[in-house]
Structure formats: C-alpha cells, structure tokens
Image (cartoon, rainbow, N blue to C red; front, side, top):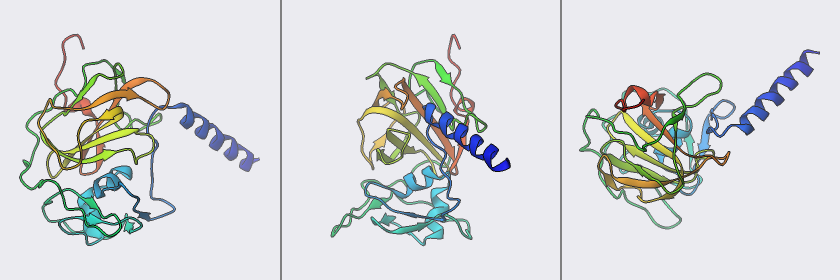
Length: 237
C-alpha cells in the first residue's frame, strides 16, 4: 500500500513538473560528478547545480585561465577553502585546440552598484524556493522584445546547454554576483563580451509551455536570490 502511494505521488510530481514552464531543479544527489559537454563553462556547470563557481574551481584544482575539457569529469562536492579572487571566464577546449578567455573579469567591482530591469513587462511568476519552485522571476514580454543587461559585467555563458532555460545568457557582475536571462529567441552577445547596464543582450523568446517571457535570475555565491530585492520599484507596480 505504501509503495503504491509513493508511486502515485512520484507520478503526480512528474506530471506537474512537465506542465510547468519553469527550469528543472538539478541536484548532484546520486552522482557527485559531472562530465563536461561541448559548450559548457565552469560557470554554467556551477549554475546548473546551484553551486559557487569559485568553490567548484577550487575543488577541482582549476586555476586561471580556467580551461575545462569535453568529457572531463568535474567533482561537484568536496572540502573547500576560501578560493582565490577570480581572474577570468572559463573556456572549453575543443579537440586539439585550447580556447583562451576572451576577456578578463578581474577588474569587476567587489559589489554591484545598482540593478535595472532586464525587460519592461509585468511579473507573471514570482520567486519561490518552495513548490512550485522558481529560482528567479518570469517577466511577460513579446517575442523579439529587447532583453538588456541588469548591471555592468562580463558574459560568462551564452548558449543552450541548460535544459529548461532555452537560450541562456549568464553575466558575471562581481566575484559574488551573477545574473541569468533565459527563454530567449536569440542571443546578441558571446562569452567574454563586456556589457554595460542597459545593453541589449538577447531577444525575448518563449518558455517550454510556449509562453512569451523572460526568465531572470540573480545568484549570490551560486545561490538564487529574489531579484525583487535588488530591482528598483516601477511606477504602477
């Protein structure tokens, strides 16, 4: 009887998860390692599992220029000391060629001076770490609308490797803060690009549930924070 109840609950969770347009919740439980795929960066791997990229680098002994390799096995957990100050974005090495970082991130400020809205639209889904989980906010838009950088920084990921996020941009603003912009129709920046607050970085697309919107996240030391705590108030709510 208990087994049937558990199976029924599991089925319900899977059905609800499939109906949601939210990014899936990844967890290294059941596997403490990750095998690098083409297009991955250390930032995107850490983002996927809600970890601090500095800690992942330290655990794996990855130093500047933070090159990782396809099929390389990355440990996700371990004993971590305070990492050194970051010096640049991560590059993936294709077969036979080392890709060097396109930009240095060591001159970014220790803190973010101010934030701005990445899209002018109403919030249709707020931040929540309880069911239903949403690690950021969803902002309504129209397909093709401009998505802008929420603060100055450097693009450390631009691609589509993270299931549930569609075409995704991750910007590093300081040693502690990253922002992420998902469900894009097209990306207008590449890894290593330096961006200013307000610069157009992508165009709005649609979620897995075919809703036109931007999924926006702010991560502090790898952990999701409610963007509404950082974004300025807007007239009319």
